[in-house]
Image 1 (cartoon, rainbow, N blue to C red):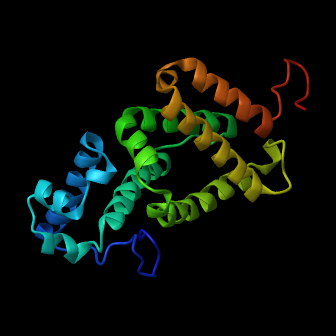
Image 2 (cartoon, rainbow, N blue to C red):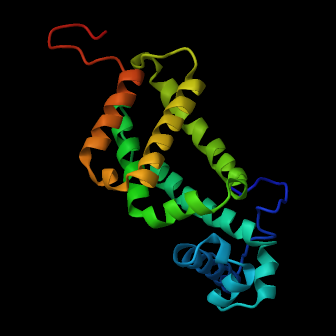
Image 3 (tube, rainbow, N blue to C red):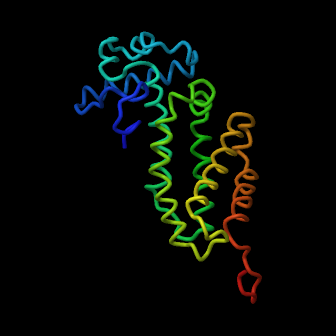
Length: 217
């Protein structure tokens, strides 16, 4: 996956490294940008400051990135892609109710474990610098979710528009957890939030469990 698709923009790298030494330079620039963002803020993260912190020449930085916007878009891409891979590459439950719990707990845990960077990216990096990146990641996630929900369509309450269900669940989950991360991060440590989200989304997505001896509704 590329950060912004085939079209070169101000928010995509000029090129991606292929050799080990070039990859080390590329990674050093991203690490330095993250450090400055966390310690001094986005406004202090000029390309000169990033290059100096990374220990590379400004020419080497510009070989890969047209400006700071592309650096932070790539930083956000890596952050979001790591989350995406965590959701999709680990063994996942095969049953919808268990999958819902897996998605909620994994999402909360990832943001909780990366909270300072998550908050800094959300609060300080302009949305325009990451819009293409998030759109590309979303385009990878939606088909996987659609396929899972279609496979279990008969076990779901809403059955007419699986694409809409995927989008609604994704937006509700990410927006709620992101709001807590920014405004009440201590809640991310508490099991009440996890259980409430699972209950909230489960009531929309799944039929209520039947009582013993009764058919499922």
